[in-house]
Image (tube, rainbow, N blue to C red; front, side, top):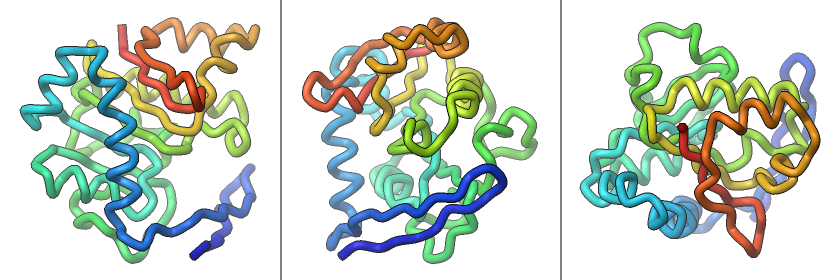
Length: 195
């Protein structure tokens, strides 16, 4: 079953069409199965993941299915999305309605800036949706929210294309991270670790 919805805000207007999983845990299970090989390359993060002491933020969480999936398994996880979301999969107290680009200016977040171990997104930096300047700003915010050694796990951004582009602003912000993992097959799944 496909659903279509229109994402509209100043400067953006696009239609998103995505397939809805029959089992609401299929999508989160798939993301976690892609995350595990990336975490295997970082023993510290993998140990925190295994012991469930990882502090996680899902950026652009939509209904919060991944946030809910992780919370049900004992992780401290919060979902952040700019859109007003009805039908949340996660508890409202685990959902933050906010513009990711303005996170450093928000007060009262249940998580502290610079204390997040893992930020996960499945599309917020998609080159087809966000202009380059917004991508740079989002990467800068991700760098600010992560603890030293914290990681950003991204699905849907072509990290190799971003790294190979001769774009000084993108290069400057990506230089603040160490690229630990890029999925060879898709080129669209990667793990960036804050230096």
